[in-house]
Length: 181
Image 1 (tube, one colour):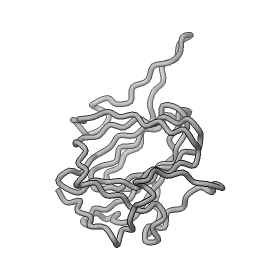
Image 2 (cartoon, rainbow, N blue to C red):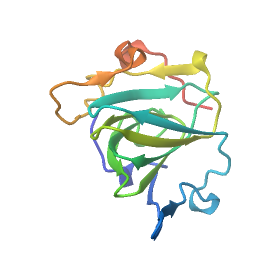
Image 3 (cartoon, rainbow, N blue to C red):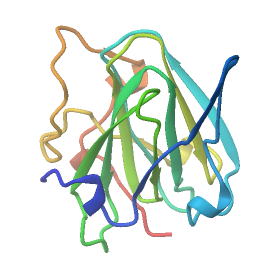
């Protein structure tokens, strides 16, 4: 399917973290309840990626264990990809991408029903997640990052790095996806 801008992606929001700098460093909020309609997150996680050109995803969890995510980068940079897999959505199978970095301080809210993945463009990148539902291995799905149906355009690197889980990902056609809660 086609790429659309992050602003056109139904129910997704993009914000920028405010940075409060001082002579000793900085302070930033990665989540304030009033900023986003999401009221309850159950888990905060940090992912640290050592190498540039590392691909993570595309990941999602089937209903009833779908997860909304709030993603920001504390160190380094990623290009974040989201794919709408909600069959009732006007942006079904469309995708968007956004650069999230320590410099631009972007925060992206990804609702339930979306596949999510990213590629690091810098070494030593630290990503912060908040999720609104617990991890359920039985409901987890991993879509191949090079799936022809999705036709995502990834940045060019001479070599890509993937986890074993992501290397074994299936195409969208091979997976059973259930996003309706």
